[in-house]
Image (cartoon, rainbow, N blue to C red; front, side, top):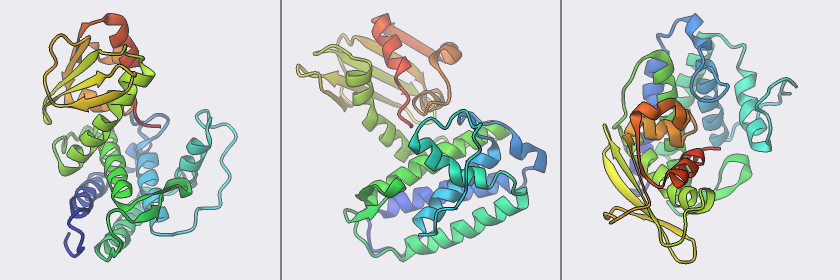
Length: 276
């Protein structure tokens, strides 16, 4: 996609386009019975994940929020955010597969046109989900992350692996890495002066070190750490599944190597999900 004058946001627009069009291609031939297949996204089926993607893009198009009352028996509606996200999903639960695919295709056309005609700058303030203010660049980064992660949910559920090294994957990687200092230093309580290494191999390969300073604040960099407190070695897809709350460490032990302080490693792995 071309046309925007903002080179700073074009890579995110391109990555979003690649992932959301991949979702459309993926679900178009899916038989009606498979739309209710569960995904690793907690509580959501294939239909629910696609409905979620449609719902958020419609919101960013300025469409009014659906007027819809959630059933009282949905177990996972514990927070305001969860209820907010569930409304456009639950509203579409009785839509047929052709209806959902048609709405997705039409939403992609509308949203692509909106992005092509975008006149705001990367650092301009915009309204994000739940009315929160953010910058246009941060909003687009978040949409790439969200759409790519849900593309992977759908691929795993449908047995159609792919795009683990796509432009969306790179944006998702950077989004996840930016959250790791908080995971290690704050949630897992890694001691001051310690370092934790994430050694990831596979479609996207990287090694990052999270360092905790004397004040207990975390930072992340690509330099090698001598004598880290913990080293976690795993493949890229498992890293994504863990950090996005799609699985737990105990379920992927065979794909995960842990060295160093076992209790700290367990604390990190118990708190590693960066998604809400």
